[in-house]
Amino acid sequence: DSGVTQTPKHLITATGQRVTLRCSPRSGDLSVYWYQQSLDQGLQFLIQYYNGEERAKGNILERFSAQQFPDLHSELNLSSLELGDSALYFCASSAQAGTGGLPGEQFFGPGTRLTVL
Amino acid sequence: LAKTTQPISMDSYEGQEVNITCSHNNIATNDYITWYQQFPSQGPRFIIQGYKTKVTNEVASLFIPADRKSSTLSLPRVSLSDTAVYYCLVGGSYGGSQGNLIFGKGTKLSVKP
Image (cartoon, rainbow over all chains, first blue to last red; front, side):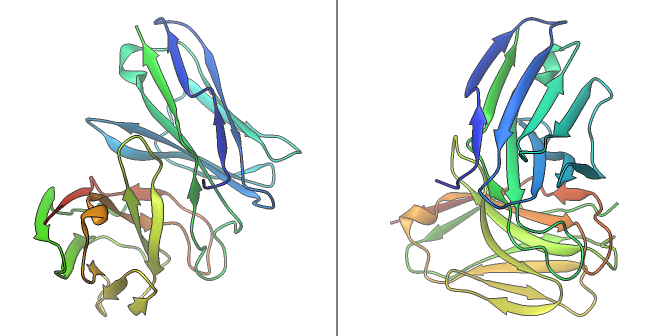
């Protein structure tokens, strides 16, 4: 158990819909990362937040957005869903922001499996 | 952006040393290198991280040559439980601002008895 929790575990929805994935980082971790894992694209970094502020952006679509709240939990919002958005979405947390020396390890949650029908 | 390339699969036997190499020709000055292990239906798990030269911990070693265009994860004396997918991750920051994080496609390691 990494200490990172993600809800829901599974999500089935239809094209065009909007969903919200939730992540609670390990106690004390200020950084939260979101990743998408699909069979054809592999693991792709989406976005990182540090203590409520966006720190880095990866291959995140405009239809997707995220935020980190004052209690440090984070939400990933996916809208206008398409079949190709079906994937495993992982959240990870780390203690460091990624500035100044090696950032250390990221602790990954169990993931949310999204199926778009 | 750094692009990473690693072998799709590797086979080994219990007790052998396994070396998995990741190529990252366009690695930036501020990029660091991290390796993760992933079992089916689980999130990736950290193995080791480095910036240059050699790093060793209780489970693996990471070799990074001076030009940093590749890195090699070394797993000593693998067991059946090491059967998993191993990912090379390049990016982030080393003394600088956070950047993009690029995962390789992963190397599926199969350890046989």
